[in-house]
Image (cartoon, rainbow, N blue to C red; front, top):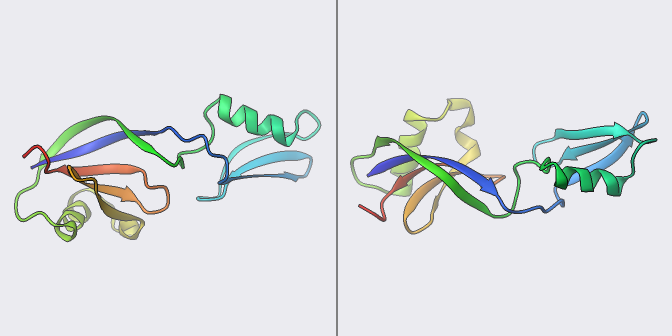
Length: 133
């Protein structure tokens, strides 16, 4: 069974996970899922509505969309043995994930692949293809 590396993109432009606040004369847009700063601008030059518009127009809404699509994928290995969610997760942990990040990922079965996804963002990262085997 092929092991795939996935390039994914989100088609969601949902801004619910973005908080915009004023601090020391700046409007700051923060991604509340991972606490990363997405954008900041002088509050004298902009408004909250303009900041949100700018984030969408410049695709700065972060990587936390609702729906992920596979843009492209690459074969990076072969999986042998009995395929279960537990064996797939173990394989990824042993071969592709840094130990400090094990707990941030889980397996999602899309009926064609066992997909390693980030727990918070649901972004697909790796997969074991079984639907075409």
